[in-house]
Length: 266
Image 1 (cartoon, rainbow, N blue to C red):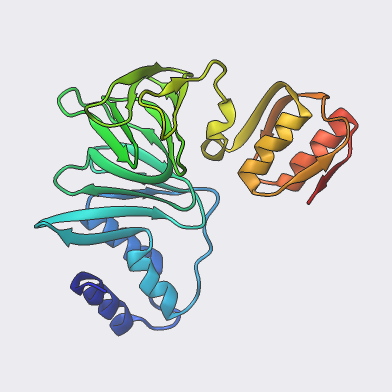
Image 2 (spheres, rainbow, N blue to C red):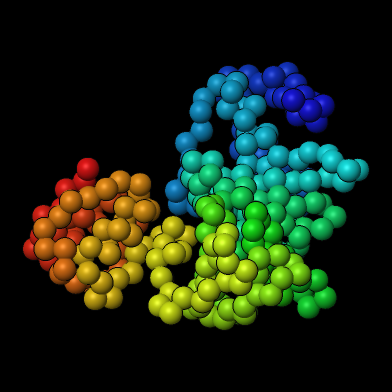
């Protein structure tokens, strides 16, 4: 553990008293000191009680460390979707298990591990850049999703214009509203999707959208999102509609009623 972490953990342990140490206030004060705003969400990760929660509150969501004489900031989403506002006004939504890193001096040059949705504050003079292992994205101001959580990288644009490439000096593609592209390790240039998958951002939007989609594809989408498998009858029946992602059992029940099918979680 670094000296920086030691100091913050010592502070927590010194001042913690059961029922009196407000972990959320600790996070808020830390974020405010470094120009970060964590946006409230309807779905909130439950806090663990006791000293462990108080200590984690300081370093769980925002972790500050020193390297090469500059301060680096990590934004982390562990078991739930987290929303942040960067110092330049850019809004970032991190998927569970994702992390965004940037330096205090250059908050518009970021490093992504996992999946994130960005609403980038426009700045003509300073483009916003995202790098990951095997992918590079540059924008001025727009809304888009980047999935760098696997070997195949993905970008889905909901507004504006995005440059997607393998690296900052590689040939790339320009994506605009409702366009999607993927980049696998054996490809040098991203491939633009003929039929973009609107459910690529279901985790951020909070709902699934289907339009005459075969039940087989519907269940594949739900399986990928919820990490469960399904068995069902009449897999060729088609489904249309929007289903909110809060309750999987409710979604399954609605699909069964709409299509007169039987679905089993496995």
